[in-house]
Length: 197
Image (cartoon, rainbow, N blue to C red):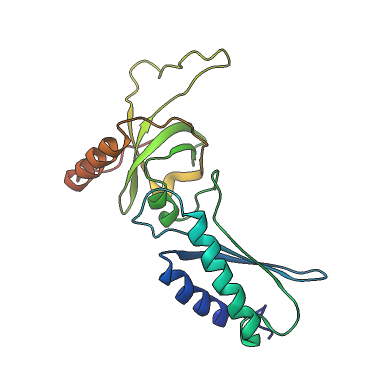
């Protein structure tokens, strides 16, 4: 088995370098072809908010590239294109860790029964998400309203999420830090079952 097929040594080496820069290895993608391409997707630890600093990612990339050039055990002796990148703004959320990293972000979310939501993720418990619905604006820029009798607050079990994606947002609420703190405080005290959807 080649170093490209068995990524154990690469993952271990990359994890050591990334740890030193306060980053975590999210995923390794390998693409074949003339010159194989290895893409390391990195992110901040799940307890941190915000995005990884691009200068930090570039420095980690430089160190990893030097390491790969010096040690054939990592990716083999043939030329390989190594790319170190972040998940991107509109990432699809597929693991609980992704949700924890996306606290405070606006999500497009669909549940297993096909119900679609546009909501801000405020807290992530062991089995449920706490969100605030934000229906957005219509084609004319007018604010959309929630259906009468619908609560702005929403709790969805993680197992009920079919798809979820972070939306690009240029003007998050000014009180976002307080919204997250309040939701996390409420979740810590909240022992009720998630709202059925």
